[in-house]
Every structure is written in C-alpha cells, then in structure tokens.
Image 1: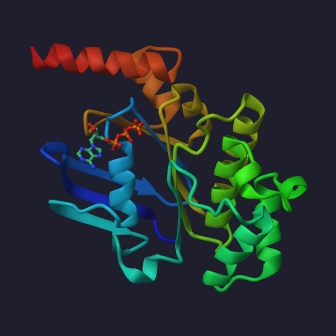
Image 2 (image 1 turned 120 degrees about the vertical axis):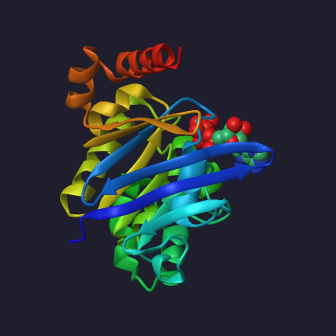
Length: 241
Ligand SMILES: Nc1ncnc2c1ncn2[C@@H]1O[C@H](COP(=O)(O)OP(=O)(O)OP(=O)(O)O)[C@@H](O)[C@H]1O
C-alpha cells in the first residue's frame, strides 16, 4: 500500500478576488480517517475540490494516489461526496445506486451492499425525492461507495444527521479505513475530531494543526478539539504580535 493518499505542496487557490488557500502544504496518510476541521468559510470545500480535481488552482503540486490530481485515471479510484446530494430525485434509492454502479462497471450486488452499508436497505424502493435530507446524503454516500474506491473524499457528510446516524456513519468510515481505504472527511463539528485518526485544522485557508487528537490535546493542554482549536488561534495571534 502506498504511504500517502494525498500529497500537497504549496497549493494556492484564488476564487473570485479572494485568495482562499494562499500556500497550503499537507500530507494525508493512506489507510486512515483524516478529519478536515475548520469553521465555515475556512476553505475546506475548496481544498477538497482541489483534491478531487474540480477546482482551478493557481499554483502548487497535488498528488493523489500517486497521480496528479484531476488525472482521468483517478476518477474510479476516488469516491467524492459533495455537500449537496448529487442523486436523482425521481429515481428510487436502488435505481440511483445501480445507475452509478453501472457507470463504474460494478454489479447490482455491489449496489445492494453499498445501500446496506449506509443503512438504507429498508428504503431501497423509496423515491429519493421523498427522503429526508440526511437520507438523501446517505444515498450520495452509497453512490460514492459503490465503485469500491481507494480514497473517499467526503464534504461534511454528517451535516443534519441525528446523533445515532452520525455515530453509525463514523463507524462506517472507521471500518472502511480498517479495510485499507483512505478517507478525507470535512466537518465544522469539532466533536467529530474524536472519530478521526488524524486531524487537519484549517483556518482562513491555512493549516493550523496537522496531528492526532491526543497529541493536539497534549500540546495545547486542553480537553477537546474545540478548546485546542481556540488555544492554537490564541497562540498564533500572540506570535503575530
Ligand atoms: N465561487 C466562489 N467565488 C468566490 N469566492 C468563493 C467561491 N466559493 C467560495 N468562495 C469563498 O472561498 C472561501 C472558502 O470557501 P469554502 O466553501 O472552501 O469554505 P468551507 O470551509 O468549505 O465552508 P463551509 O463549511 O461553510 O462549507 C469563502 O470565503 C468563500 O466565500
């Protein structure tokens, strides 16, 4: 297995007139769940878009699964779930996931397995348009899982989900990593940090920390990720003075 799923050096992204990522360098190890945490507008989606190759970048090097980000050969190796569900409202859950399976050359049983993995088997025949927001985002996740990707890139997959479903999804992410897959999962909910093998704390387009949660807590003398994040911001402000 390769050591790093993602390697980024001096990534610069400008959106409109805003320099969203001024100069970002980071490595995401393979086979782990890496949490990309940061407040709204910190650049999480922009970084994720750059990794999956749908963001115009001004400069920098991005290597994903050993290939330049955006390479056509990466399409089948990466499962990407955006913040807004990208499935068809007028099709059932099963028809949606089977459709994505057929595009990826996977069979119907892979679709059923993916639906089971996101705990939607009991809704497999329901039209996606009739599902709740959380259920719809799980259909998108099933569609991303169906091709058995090596890397899953998930933009805020647990937004709007109740605590039980959030826990179940994080257990699924941890299981997928245990099977050797790599996951980059963004969230603005700091308590999801405890579910991640590693954390990237992003603020205003810059990496504030790249560490495990225990190391981060030890380094900042805090009890949870939110406090650690605030301590790091205070420390950076003091250093800037
Ligand atoms: N199309 C765009 N044109 C100009 N600026 C943009 C565009 N899209 C995003 N931005 C800006 O880029 C910055 C980072 O946005 P991004 O969506 O990456 O943040 P985020 O951390 O994912 O936030 P959220 O958690 O709210 O989704 C924000 O300041 C945003 O206003």
